Amino acid sequence: MESEKTIKNLLKLGLTEYEARIYVILLKNCYMTMKDLSELSKVPYQRVYDVVKMLEQRIS
Image (cartoon, rainbow, N blue to C red):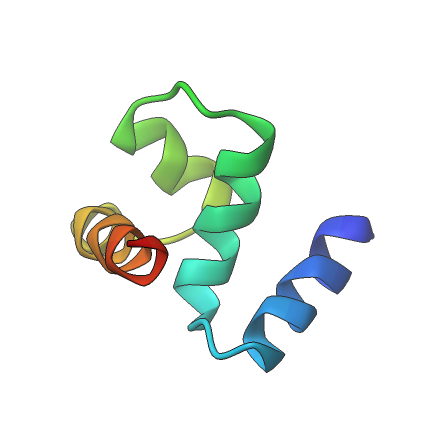
């Protein structure tokens, strides 16, 4: 699956597994709730906010 290959490449670049999963989902669907993001990425809902915050810091 293309997403899994992308996730593996993002891991090689230093992202955590949760960051990589969320990043791939956001590339495909930029407008969604945190609950939807959690369900699609299979990242626990309690962690989604922290992971998104870490991705924002990596980008800035």
